[in-house]
Every structure is written in C-alpha cells, then in structure tokens.
Figure 1 (cartoon, each protein chain N blue to C red):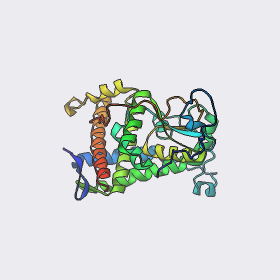
Figure 2: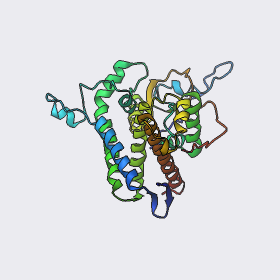
Figure 3: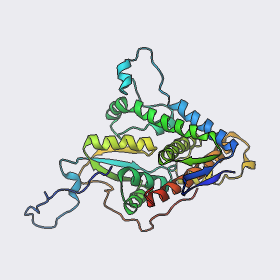
Figure 4: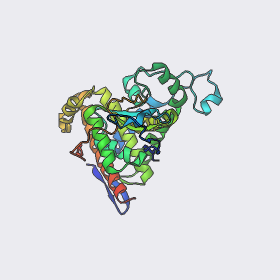
Length: 188
Length: 127
C-alpha cells in the first residue's frame, strides 16, 4: 500500500508499491497521448516552433476541453484567437509535467525536489480532471458519491474501477499538497 | 510573482457630495481586466490554495479566502491587471489545471475580490 507523502529533512518523500507505480505510469501516459498535438503535414514549421497553431480549435472531447479551457466565458472568437497563440505551449507544459512525474516512478521510494513536487501535483491534477470527466462528476454531490467507493474488492466494472482509481489519485494528491503546503511554511 | 493590486494615490477624493462608493479599484483605466477562477468539483481546496500562494505569492489567509470564495460562490476574481497580464496568469492557471477565464472589469463587478470573508478558514478536505 502506498504511503502518504510527507515533508521532512529529505524534502518531500513518498512510497508507492510497484503496481501503484505501474498504474500511475499508465495514467500519466494516457493523458500525455490525449494532449500530444497532432502533426499536420502542411504546418508552418516556424509557427510551430514559436508555439503558434493557426488550426487550433476548441476540443470536442470534454476531458480535453477541461484541460485546455476557453479563456473567455462568453467570447468564443477571443477564446479561439487566444487558443491559437497559447494552446500548443500549454499542451507542451502539461506533457512536460506528466513526463517528469513519470520519470520519477522508477523507484519505490519517491524523493521529490520542489520542482518535482510541482510537476507531480500538476500531473495528478490533470489525471483527476480526465477521470472525473469519464466518471461524469459534475458537482460536489457526484464527487461525494464517487468518493464512497473505497474498497478494491468492490471493483466489478469499468466505472467502479475508475472510481477507485480516481479516489486513489485524489488521496495521493491531497497528501502531496499537504506536504507542499508544509514546505511553504518552512520556506523550503 | 506578485501582482500589485494596490492603487497609487490617484484617489484624491474629488469633491463629491454624498456617500463615497469605495472599491472602484476595478474601474481604474490602467487595470481594466480580471482573472476569474471558477469552481469545479475536482480540484482540491488545498491545491487551489497552494496555487494561489505559490504562483501569486498571496498570504495563507488571502489564498484561503479566495479559495473559499471560489468554492462557495462559484467564482472569484483573484487578480487584476492589463489584458496581457491576466491572460498570462490564465495560461499559468490552466497549466495547473484550474479553470480560469479573463474578463473586462466592469467596475460594478459581480463577485468582487474584496467581498465576502469566509470565517471557516482552512477547511481542508481530506481525500
């Protein structure tokens, strides 16, 4: 069983079982593949280099739309223009955090630098956002309902399995963030 | 990276009669945009507070107050600035997975940053 992250002399440390690391590795990988921008044959290489994407549009997938939201609530044209300038680099920075967290999964014992911890918290958050869309968590009531699912022996279908995974990543992120908050207190 | 919200001494109490409606911070011409964070059922309260503290450099009290405002009212204006500044913040917030939008400050503002002090601070949710 995983141990909660804690903050101590070595920095932020945690412990994960091999099966848990495998699970996280595949979750991080799944979100990376969702975020990976499709390469287009006729793309202007210079534009791509500076992060421009004239073809960018609001994602049709709900989970992806949550990861890459519109910047304006009610001005679609402004949101689209903004997306063309920023979405590619946003995708890349998210992918960077997910891959960095994934790289740290080689050992049972996790020792995180402040930068590692930031990447981990972002990666876990993105994983949870995606799982929450798949689980149709729309409000606090839905979240509470999913939260009841804690017993792995109850996993009998995809939905209950996803709920258990969601709760595991929630628990892990909460313990990580508590450790990060503690490190802020001590200025570490 | 702290964004200064404080205004300069341009509020010379121009000889208005009657009551002074304060908090027209938002209508100052040089800071006409707001960064809004929206509530969602996924982001942990502790995480939202952590992001406000570490990214904006807000105090624990201010970060928690804004976080609770998001949680209870559905949204909160967490920073002001030029369009470019708040857009830059929005991308950073999206990087963290927070649901952020930008909007032109209206002056009459709904759900302003200064209103509604939550009393139960630090209601940390345990996962």
